[in-house]
Amino acid sequence: MAGIIELSERQQRIVSIVKDEGPITGERIAKQLNLSRATLRPDLSILTMSGILEARPRVGYYYAGKTNGRLFSRFIQRMKVKDYQAVPVVMTEDASVYEAICHMFLEDVGTLFIVRKGAALSGVVSRKDLLKAAMGKQDLNELPISVAMTRMPHIITCSQEETLLDAASKIIQYEVDALPVVKPDGENDHLKVIGRLTKTTITRAFVELGEGQGAV
Ligand code: ADP
Image (cartoon, rainbow, N blue to C red; front, side, top):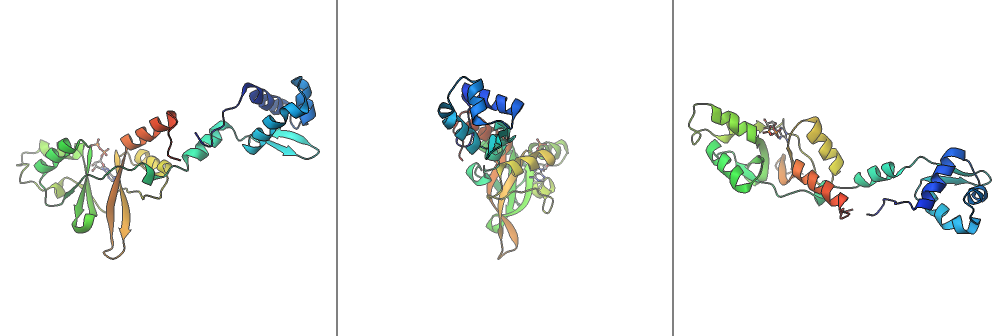
C-alpha cells in the first residue's frame, strides 16, 4: 500500500535508539548495533525520507514524531468520494409511500433520494421514515412520499471532490446512514444527484484498505 512504511526489525531498533538517545550521530547508532556506518546508510535514509527521523548536520538524528499512524492518516486523507461512491437510487416526488417501500426492497438499499425534474435533489427517505408512515392509518398507495421525506434545505450532502474522511465524519456527526453525492446545477439553481455515499461504501473502502487494494 503506497505511503505506508513497514519497518524492518533493524529499522525499528534504530528508531528506538534515536527515540531514547537522540540527537545521536549515525556513527554512534552503528556502534550500538555492532554494524558499520555504511551498512546503516540505506536504513537511515529510508527513515529520514519517510519523515520518521530527521537528520541535522553536525547534530545527528532525532525522532521527528511522524509515526506510521500519522502517515496512515495522511494516506486516508487522500481518499476521495468520487473513487468510492455508489450509483444513486432515486424516485420522483409524485411516487407513493407504497411504491417507495417496494423500490427500497427491489433495489436493496436503505435510503432513497427523492428528485424533481433534472435529478434535482428535493428529499431523502430512510427505512424509518417509511416505517413511521406505515404506522398511520392512511392508505399507503394514496400517501405521497413527499410527506414522509426529509426535505431540502435540511439534507446533508457531499461532493465528489470531498475526502472520504470528511463525508464519513458527516455521517457520524449527523447520525445518518447515507449522503447524496451532489453537484451544483448553476443554470437551475439546484443540486443535482450524481451518487450515493453510505456506511456500506465506507465499510467497503475500509476492507479494501485492509486487503491492500486502496484506490490511492
Ligand atoms: P434510519 O434511521 O432509517 O436507519 P437514517 O439514520 O439515515 O436511517 O435516517 C434518520 C433520519 O434522518 C430520517 O428521518 C431521514 O430522512 C434523515 N436523513 C437520512 N439521510 C439524511 C441526510 N443525508 N441528510 C439529512 N437527513 C437525512
